[in-house]
Amino acid sequence: MRLLRVELRRFRLRALIRWGAVGAVAVALLLVAGAFQTSTPLPQAQIDEIRAQYDEQVADWDAHKDEYIADCKQQEADAQEADPSADYACEQGGPGAWEDWIGGTSSFSDAGISSIQSFGVVFLLLALFLGITFAAAETSSGAIGNWLTFEPRRRRVYWSKLAAASLGVLPIVAVALAVGTAGSWLAYEVHDATGSMTAALWTDLGWSLGRLLLGSAAFAAIGVALGMLTRHTAAALGVVVAWFVVVELFGANMLDGLQRWLLVVNTEAWVAGGATYSVETCTPSDGGGLSCSYVDHAVSLAQGGLVLAGLTIVVAVVSALVFRRRDVA
Image (tube, rainbow, N blue to C red; front, side):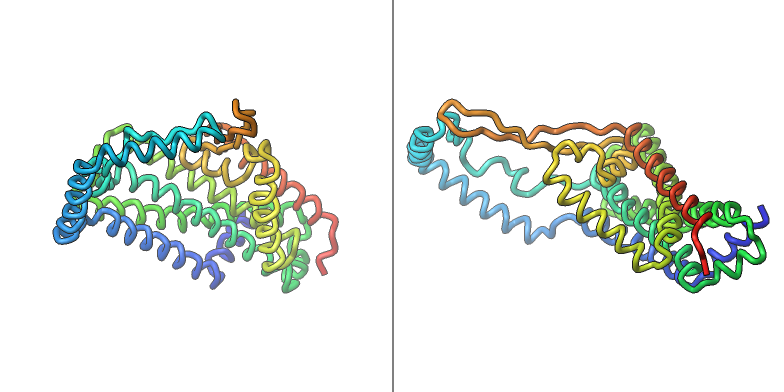
């Protein structure tokens, strides 16, 4: 416990950690600014302009409806010669409903909560960075070797650093989430656009914020492990970037089955209570060739938590084993 208190003090006193806390609050304020802009209704002059354009389109459709439908059906028939399944939905033409032109009103119960969960990923990445720099700074400077002369039991040193980073990011992320959530709600409240915030929605939002806090602790632990493994902040960040480029981007595009186990997908499932990913499925069409469509697959909250926990444990244990054997001079 004394080692943990020392490491927590070190974490708190590092200048880069303090700047990270400022950055977290800045991100939260950007979330609030976005909520204010999203919830602001359109000016009446712009609504009148859109209404004039809509009325013009309605009048044109009423005057030339039969002509437009006949032309559409001709194009559909030509397309069906190559693909019998072609359907241009000609009878559904026209300018559509006025609500489609003016757009629906965004509410906190819908857009606001989704934005908070999306911005939560930024806080997780920030926790990862803080964990990396906290561990890598001591290893790259050689300070860890000096520290081991006071406490030679490497296992205690390693786990105290990992625990300190995981605990240290919690107040930073908690304050940022509180500012972002309260500020977003106030922004929607000012414009009378909070929506139907039932007790169930507030409960779901609370659980989501709690999972974000736990996720930030896990990402900070992963950061410490990577910092200890690579012994340099830039090298650890390079590993993170390489992972996202090779596995999360190119690997997912090449192997559809890999998408279910991607860190991005499972983190989203953990934060939002579930996630979906799309896989392109192609079948032979009647007129020859292939007919392709995207099929959605669900990833549960439980899987997201297990994948995140498993990754944290594996990386932390591997880093601990390497740290116990490696020369730190």
